Length: 337
Image (cartoon, rainbow, N blue to C red; front, side, top):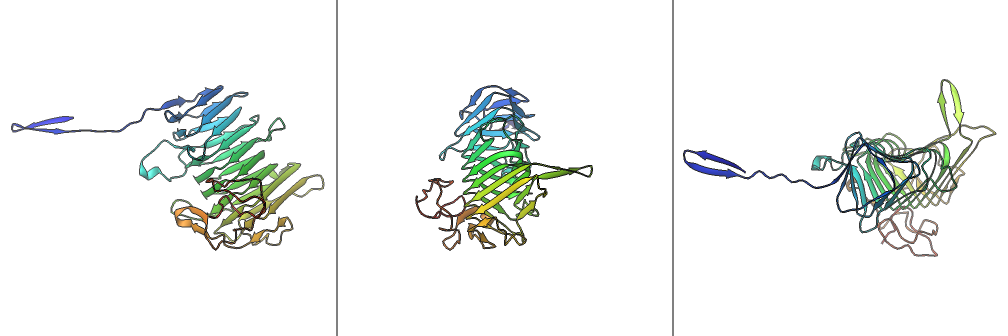
């Protein structure tokens, strides 16, 4: 407190500032360890999960990244969020102004050699990139499995795969500066009961298609093409404000294999409206989200996505609503109640 004595009058002013105890990390290399939710975890100057080591993050954990910081993974990352206690990855500025501001930290970067990564019931937000995965795993396991996650307010792309192996289920990506999914230079990908949304807002200008798929890159007037690309989409929504939300760019060569399928999906595309890779897919229909301006991507009662999907093995949606087994499911990460 400050005490003022003026002409014999005593006045006292209390100065109060709130803080929070936390675990702090500064440019560290992480070995086998488990982070719990007793205190937040604050990262400066990035951290690296070492090769052959595993970082396990338990349910309810809050991770805060300082500007310019990134979570590098050369080993394995396991995030065990739950429906009741999600894991949150965001910046370290907690003022109201920063609550939905993109680009505050770098994102998660899985390096070549990283294997067997799993992220469940997690919200990744306000970063430059949500998740980037480099290269196929060096064993027979999936490189990254994402379940029941939300990626939003991203300055660049939500998920980037570069010759990667990524499977995602019940995942919602929205408010993205570039692509919700950016699948480059080949790889193996599967997305099931996902919702990928692209609309401009007060903080994001939507100018790139939600989905980009490519099997090559060009350098010094030379084409370098991957010999394998396989992407499958089941019961998923890819919709936004652009005329065409599919950016498909494949280099054709008799010795190169690439394929993709959209099975019981809802997509928005002008150029690819008659694509033979689409199976029972709704094209250029409004998914009728409940309230886009409030970022509510539940289906309204008149949505064409209701009962338009194929029966799948995912018994629950992203928020725990049960999907009836043996009959058609709703398209997207939310099952209509």
